[in-house]
Image 1 (cartoon, rainbow, N blue to C red):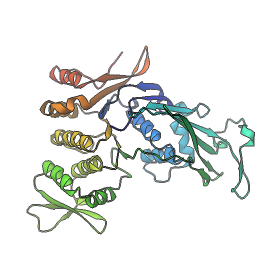
Image 2: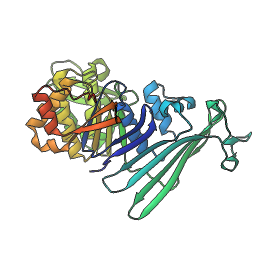
Image 3: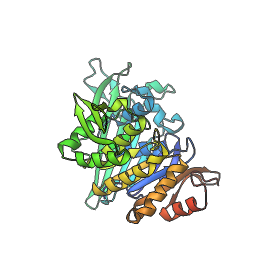
Image 4: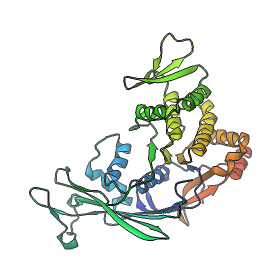
Length: 362
């Protein structure tokens, strides 16, 4: 399996420090509101977008629902907006390559034509005005048994926030193709995803999962860049946008899971828009497709019913039990922010004995 064994996060969003060990194929994050579940997904996204200096702004765009996130929004990535302390994220991968990532803000002098810049010999002017910083620096190291490779990406803007310089990391090609599905799936182009699957002759897999969701579905097509679903008994195919939120949510997740070119899927609030009767079907689809296409999945949820459905699915499919990692993220009084892991055995015990695992108060 591709993907990450663990992650260590410093000074990112609401996370001053958090380390999570022993990731599995399908990883589920629990916790109270604002405990940092979504921030963990975003930290993983940063680790898979190292060569693109626009990744931090793209991550903010997912929260603001604005495709053109302003440079000033980058400040909200830093814990307590402490922009003088870099964000640091580290992880070991299953291929034994270690990643270390550092995100910082700096100042680069812009000449009049903005085509030449000077780093002022590395000096950073002292200023309490956050807008004084105009450059985002992404430094990262990849370490294997062959040694360490260091890279840097950067993005510089002018006083109006317009990008004047974008430097991509040289000689670096990201091997992890990652899909981030927000709670409302904003920014995810399902038509493109399905077109790619249909081109690869994967339509049968999608239809099998759709008929499991609703037995009346007999076909799915893309016509004039729009998605149409055929229901038994209807005189014509129905545009997907005219169906319920649950079907669209389900199809988005299934399509991302089925795509063989995707190696990591990040799903925020997986149960959003879905009826509880669909939870078990969706979990089965995720585990089946993630195993078949050899990908790693990270999910957040608040729903107790969803966890019960996950347990039921795993009880019926014991081969998938070892593929689950369940983590409760909690801010404790004595140890600060912690992540507590449960395997399927812990989930089964919690469901059978009505034990609350979505929050741990210590």
